[in-house]
Image (cartoon, rainbow, N blue to C red; front, side):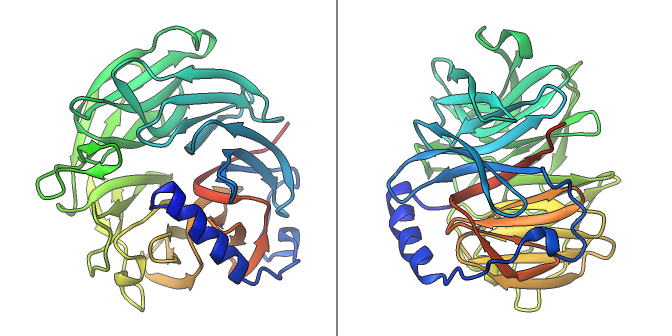
Length: 357
């Protein structure tokens, strides 16, 4: 979802009507699907009637629960041991909702601190809830955190290098943060010609920060995924447009490597990667601007497939199986991207998963 809400809703209403969502196949029958049958896929949604929230579906596309929100939400996260979920409102966000991962019931509504807005992403780590944020006046990068048992208390605030942080990812004992580099006025980027974007690795106990340079200056690091000792980064132009520049990179052993160019070129992604996911064998990236999903071989980084999908949005590894969603309400499986399962919701750019125990 890359455009403003009103235009998005009108566009999606039209796209869904024309998408021909006729598949009735179940994901349980897909080749290679090894998920627990009660696994939930959880993500933000919006409806054609301008309602927002977060919802859960099972691996067959059936709705399990939904929690309404006052505004559009963006990147959800789950603490499976605590059976807790959290989701931040999209930049410039006014709140975080903490909810039951099993039922979707609201546990806590956390308002933004004065003079600060949320950047749309949160994460659980080290017994705390973390969220990327920025100062309203300057867009200086911040990382806010709360003790899980003190969510109503004012957050601890860690100042980060740069401006405009975006996704935060908990992986292998570290917090990884994509610092986008953009200064914004509401949603408008005001420094597109002179920004600096980078990747941070943060120790959640000592707050030690390590910075990694941008592999492609001129592009903003936005979205993250991880597998093993690898971090994957989805890139974006401030003004998305077709480009031959690689839009997904792997960071491994302190080195960057670009994923191989798809057969029809990077242009099909229209300068915007909304979500990235990686499994033991594949890498997936989505683009709502370009209306495509791409798959790459994780071992070689070679392109495997690009599939056209209206408003491609979320990508996720659930049970070592890659799934994707779209803003016109379908879900799909990496084993057969052309097979579409209709769902009740117009999905935002990010999913997480939870398997009840």
